Image (tube, rainbow, N blue to C red; front, side):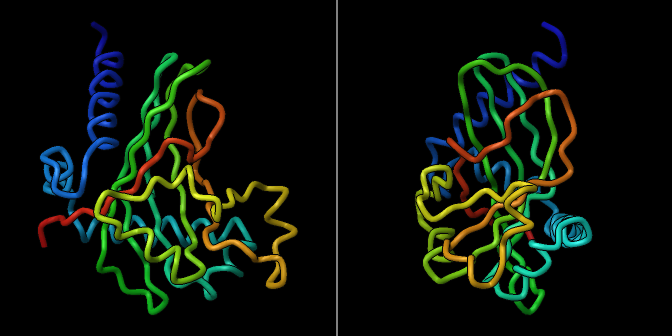
Length: 194
């Protein structure tokens, strides 16, 4: 088996485990144990700064958010069946980071390739914030109050058009796989070692 095929087979198996797990699952705990919280916090702040530099809508929305969950690096890959996974940090309005999360997802259908990207969720109200800490995780792709902001939409977002509780921005997309989305992804809180 080629190394890249082995990697994505392992990624898919881990992703499927994430999707069926709760916050105390052994796979989730193993992932949390491998996270360096200082490094992840620094990467998340840096990624948010880069997003603000490139996207004026995100920069305008930031000060109004109750919190911004930033996943600076997500790995996605597959052939017909795919998986994605990564870790992120919740940046509070005062700039502090105390909470860390994992995102994972599985997909199927006409797809092939490998991709890396990041995304940020702008949590605009208390209900969005409450979703993060559900004991069984937040199945984000099924949330009716989520809007994925694309390039065209970002130019038309204003204070008066912000009506949803969560806005997602993708950034730093690299690779050969099309179609970014959050369908089938789940976010679970993790407790990395301090």
